[in-house]
Length: 314
Image 1 (cartoon, rainbow, N blue to C red):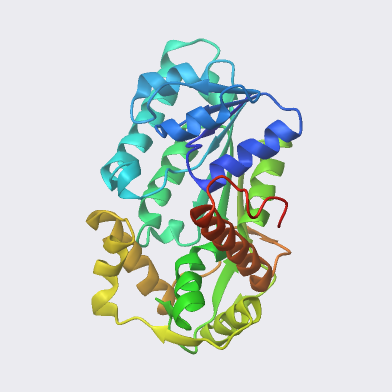
Image 2: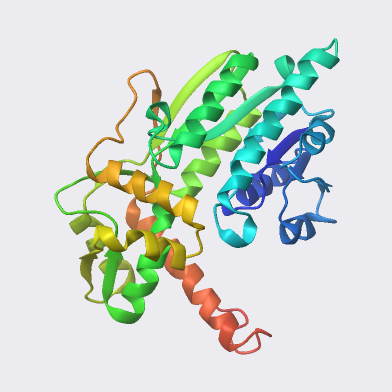
């Protein structure tokens, strides 16, 4: 049995989809009611608990051989940043109780795959929470695989939407700096592979794409996907916080993301020599093309919610 928690975001949902597609027994834990409804009747065991509470984790972990830990999204409608700290504390309380209360030492036998991020070892910006979780799990779990990911290419989606409609691609990035990036589908594939064939003991992996990209290359990839001329716009740092709040982050989460972008621009989010590097295969243009397809599907759905006009079109 595999437990995916939190399963509410796009990564958690994609991981669950792949596990089910490969005939694996999967269970999901999430506070996202829409996500729970999505999986009912589709071969996934839905845990009705709330991952902010240790009792929910204890119940969800029963009978599980492998746990895939994905911190929940920071969007305000899915819970403020404080909920993420509650999530981490509840998980550790459940695992600690498992060690002390059960002779089988389930917490020590269970294999855990943690999705983390580059910069977690330095606890920079929003990766601070991940760094704390890495340390907590390492201290209690015998079989732990940590996968630190580079910047996820699909995070450029909001900029692509602006570029499509206004021919300007806004970004928190600066010129003359290259950024390690990885496509979401490569990340999901690595997470699933690590869960299906987990390593014994402690492993630290670092996932990035086939190459790093600077702002000019990001804009060029956007031009090729949209098939139109677009210009880049480096957003003023003084405006970052409000922009992130307008995009759906609560203020605490926005501060951490702002700090993370600052560290990226300073070149401080670098590879950890202690980690084993893994390179994804997808290029930025591939990821942005998928972003564009999703944008187009949403636009069509808004125009024709019953799918009468566009039925059969890709």
